Image 1 (cartoon, rainbow, N blue to C red):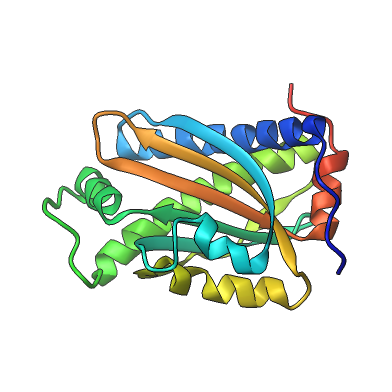
Image 2 (image 1 turned 90 degrees about the vertical axis):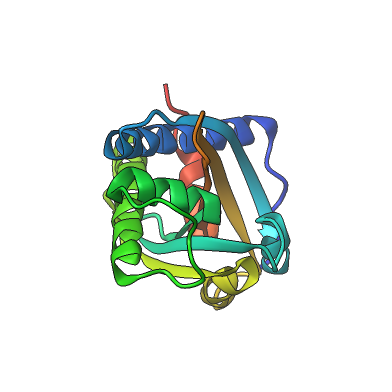
Length: 204
């Protein structure tokens, strides 16, 4: 697949607004779940060669919790939610009452809570995006990895690499002021899905 031409300023602005639209719904749903307000801090769009993605998310050796899902429908791709260990500890405290740092291995209960949170985030994000595009978008059941960032994205890069040499990433950061909670939601889409997103009108 040939490399994509650079996005225009108008295309970038539209895609950022789409990212905000989806993440606005997602953070609202997560705020209700946690009982704590969340804010959006950054939205950006990148088209990157696959080999540059680990560096883009903070480096191969940074330890993270990653929740990953497939996106099914007329827009296909992958979604990745990245959380630091401190963020996971704060989320588990708010949801389960458990205090203290996250150990080297997550328990089944902790993984179940985090996967359910990932499902709520992804479903809200894709529902808002699907309503805007007027197409159904369905998330898969979330998977979870607690590892170095390079290992977390390895399987995703293998999947993307079957058809593509690069991917478009719509990335949104969120945080909870006053709590050690911050995260990144990244939507990876292929060329055909990229064309559909670019042809859609910008959100009002």
